[in-house]
Image (cartoon, rainbow over all chains, first blue to last red; front, side, top):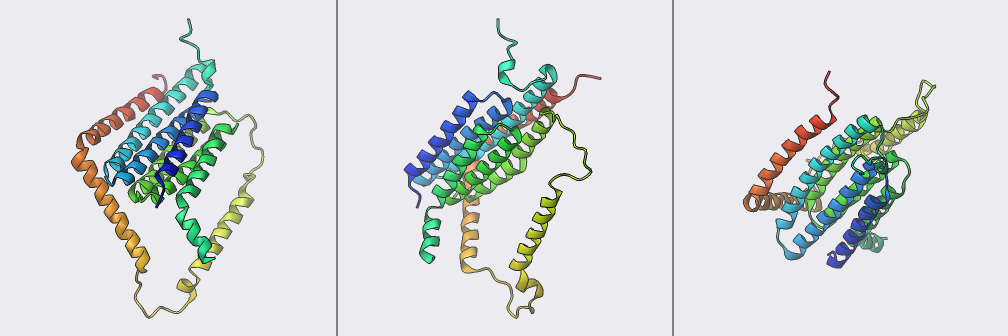
Length: 100
Length: 183
């Protein structure tokens, strides 16, 4: 048996690490990875609550989230490659084209 | 010893969870993007272990397939495209080929140690048969996959179909975004 609180704690910590990474890193690739970490923390919560409530809906939704994460990563990496072609950098603080 | 193993088995989730947190911390802290990707792979595998210990067998396997098999490889390719290496290698062989050969030999040794009896021993008189524990585990996994598929296709068919459209759009969008300028 796994304690629900333990799962929530782990997923909270994982989400925090992910959000810290998004905020403090400059490399766009690492930022994408941290977004993935956050999505996985959410998935962990889905599964924990599915197990807690005895319903399978949470697992089905976690599978959907996994698919959306894959789509997101494909588009995000394509954006990174396009950005590298145009601006020759993947550091997000070098990208200030929209700055007035 | 028995007791120790039992304790580990009971706390499998916590062990995998803490390992995943460590991997995530390395993703954030590491300077090299390649190291980040490898730590990300480690964290994803540990999260798959968490899923397995939460009795979501199908999702654990899907996690390994999708992340370790797909997304991490994609990340590695983009790191290779984007991070220009400054120093060119002059030697013919890679620096790590010695280690690679050693690892292969180690793998062969471990494999032959495990399957020593099967390979070199006399043919077993009994037919091959799953142990009860393993058979039960497979049964549980089958039930889990059945339950998930029932939930997905009965309860959430519309989101599932929308996901397929989103994946198609992402596919086309990624190709359009990443293609070179017209020739």
